[in-house]
Image 1 (cartoon, rainbow, N blue to C red):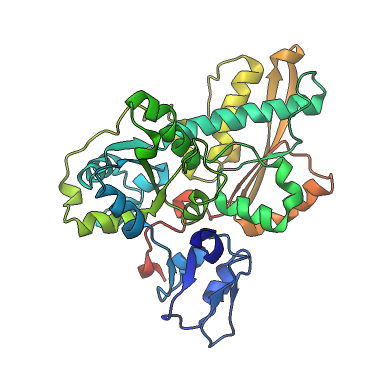
Image 2: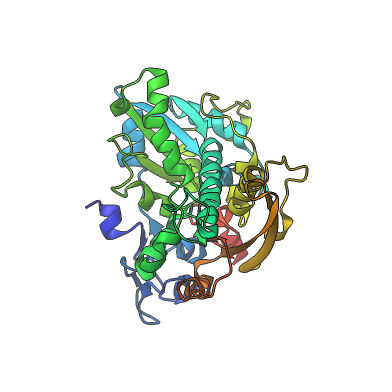
Amino acid sequence: MSTLLSDGVIHVSDKCKACDHCTSICPTHAIKGRLGEKHHIEVRKCINCGQCLINCPFGAIDDVSMVDERIIKALKDPSKFVVVQEAPAVRVALGEEFGQAPGTNVKHKMYAALRRLGFDKVYDTEFTADLTITEEGTELICRVFNDLGVPGYEAFGPLPQFTSCCPAWVKYAEDKYPQVLPHISTAKSPQQMFGAVSKTYLAEKLGIDPASIYSVSVMPCTAKKYECDRPEFIASGFKDVDAVMTTRELAQMIKAAGIDFMSLEDEQADRFIGASTGAATIFGATGGVMEAALRTAYEVLSGETLDKVDFKAVRGFKPVREATVEIPVKALGGKVLPVNICIVTGTKYVDDVIEDVLAGRSQYHFIEVMNCPGGCVNGGGQPIRRDTY
């Protein structure tokens, strides 16, 4: 078994001051240790989210790095064709590591820096975030039709449907609520979809042996390291994603290479599988997956193009938010279907929602869960602002 799967991604170092702050942050109570004694992480309970890491006031918690042993090794190997993808939340955080204000969009300099680091192709995860939107939205429609008794949809899963993009949330469900797994979308996360596409469709179009392609992702999330090593993600017979680095680690690579990041000329991502609709951009914020999937579901079910594409009711930072979207269903003669939705930001707030689902009390059709407060933009792999403590 992989070290990451057996030993976990997050570890407490010898710098631990035993202040006990991390235990108040951990959503699964995986951090153990008495006040005044060095703490440790119970791997079985840890969901690898890294919230303890970015909130530790002493920098005493670390995440396992794949940079030296995997990524740099692959970049130096002439037999490897190394492709990289970056999540939308990275572009608005990376600049902080180079003196820019939080939220500054530096994606074009990021693309340039990645090429200077030696990556053969630089793509954007937005492309497969759009695929996720299509897959989850379509799956939701099929589950709704199954629930309504429409013939031909009997094989689809039950309602409500939970999102599957956040690996920390998925592990939490697997560990604590295995009964709810049939409710979780069957779609891979955008990271894993991209890996699968890179080893199949991209390999074919570029005329490259999939065995030679090394797929790297830059993510705002430490749990993505755990996700990429899961043994089921081998769509092509090879690992979908070979290695993950965080926003912080990308900044460290750029600095170690002596690249003057802010002086770089802007560049574009490679466009072969870099194009996207723009809906994927909102994935990084809580409610973003829900809003994007609802757009797809609305247009497919109603047959109408949305003049107003924003679903503002799903936005905000309240830990649990709910709304109802009324969709006229063309296949049912225009009958209006009220689709009840729920957004949970913070795994520690999801228990009551799950308990209602398992007890048959839930009225929701679609539930988005993201572990980190505010979504991926505040993931465990993002820049750490210790000056705010």
